[in-house]
Length: 619
Image 1 (tube, rainbow, N blue to C red):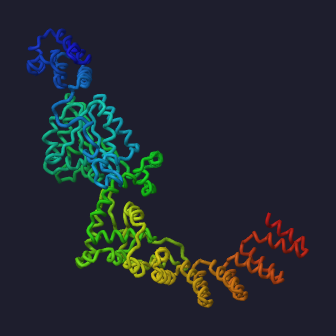
Image 2: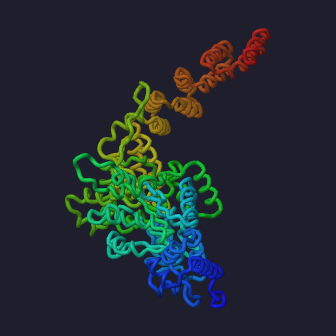
Image 3: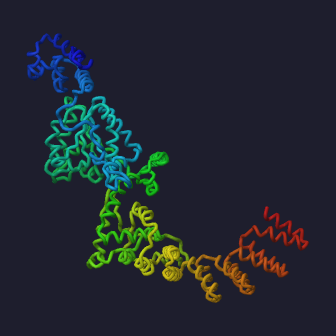
């Protein structure tokens, strides 16, 4: 009769089992109602083919009264409810398929259309999911729930490590089975949970994202923990799946043993959570990164974009979660804060190192402001700008955060340019967020920094590498006077690159003595090739004596190319003994390749035994 009325075979089987049990017990429905503690109408509807599937509570009560196997009868009830679509209770929540991931507080991911604020494109900005070890544990919990056993799982990890997305991916098989999902949040999370938990019915996912808002509520947190525990142990109301997320500091707080003589504020939460934490790591491990790269190569542009910045430390989810908000913070920053960010973007794209001196950024920012904005600056504008930019977004990223250089750990050596530059850069330093740096490289690539940038670089930058790179960029943009002064400052800080370049410029300007002084300084700081380059310039000018003098200086510093050029000059002048002596000097310096040249000279001189001995050394 049930099947004729459109009901499922499982419902027919359920009612048949109940009827058989009633006959064996030799009871009528009125007597059964009294024994089961149910109303007469409830019992009558449970047996009637004209009525919907009886509730799980009714089936359990009847099974106990008739001594029928409860688990088997509940399994029939659940399957029947699923097949006829009557399993949806009047409890809170709605079908999982009606929820979107962002409705459940999964962070919007990556730059692009999402950041632009278009709802139509926002849902498309969704990277492929990279499964990790904790996903397998979640899968087992979901499988147990589908088998009829209620479960609770609380994912613990730092901000934007992928906890909520992992929960969302895990419940998708339940969506295919018609499960509901309830996310208590109105009027407050704690109040909604406390008022509605007792109404949660079977086949429901209870979504406690940011579970500290529920379990940590000072007024009702313990009551909520007790209500969740009661839901999990109630077979009549199951199966249910409770999913939550927590930061590690909250997990530690709720599970810590109480201090003697102090009140135990989280006893019920501690009992509820014991053994149900699932750690989510901060970074992708090797297999997860390999999967992400494969998905990126297959066309996932969000993963590909994140990997360009975060592949080294594996913090892919933090990058994806933080990028939209970082861009939003930049686009809507106050005038002073935006000017500081733009000066930082230009500094990084023009070659300044990761650690940007605060004095440099502050001085550089002024010409990035319009005259009207500049006129409205107050005395504390810089402090306010840095405070605004230090506020973190998802993933604990900030647009511009204060940082520190690690101390230099090197064996004792003569002062180098790098060490001098590092020592010269005192005061607070800041680091630009990787995503904003990349955004600046593309969005500002055709823009030339204003005069305040070059002035600040000359005034505040001290590391020779920074000065040289900014000088290079100044030359490309025809800011030649700034480039000239930046080169001289780099040279003053011992940069061999700057010293060598200035030496060449002095030589071209007809100041050989000045060029030689600068070349020797560059050589002392590690650029031994500059002496050879000056020698080539003097050779072209016909200054043979000057050439030999410079080559001798380079050779004395261990430059074997210079030594070989001297050999050629001695050989060309007919001084074979002198040439051979210089070749032997090259051998003494460790250049074994010249042994062949020396052997050739011995052979040409008729000393075949000497030539053969030298060739044996080569072998």
